[in-house]
Amino acid sequence: MTPPDFIDPNAPKLDPKFQAAVQRLHQLTVLGRWLTLIGLWLTIGALSLWGLRYPISLMQDYFTWAALRHGLANNLLASLGLGLCIGLTVSVLVWQSRNILFGLPKPEQERLERMVFKIWQQGESHPLWKWIQPKSSSRS
Image (cartoon, rainbow, N blue to C red):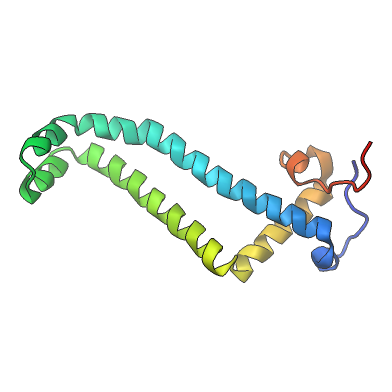
């Protein structure tokens, strides 16, 4: 399949195929962020929780804020890993909630449109081409 015939980056914005491709690229972005988070939790998160297993077992019996502070302060690497996982999870949740509640911000929408246009110009050699390619209206 060849890229569309238009050259002007402003022309395709009204094209429904173009808008569908922008939406698919946004869905791929969301999926990529969540897959990255899952991978992060399965690696760094799991290792961090494993490193904090003794302080966690102590806090299950006697939870105090001092025990929590002491457990995190004495296991700095595990605490940083857990903080990274929690921080990135919160940031993705806030990002996706903002997009659901208020829609995509204009700069983000324009960035996605530029990326789709660039993918269509490059054609089949682009790694995202098969997910972003314009769908033909006739079925074979």
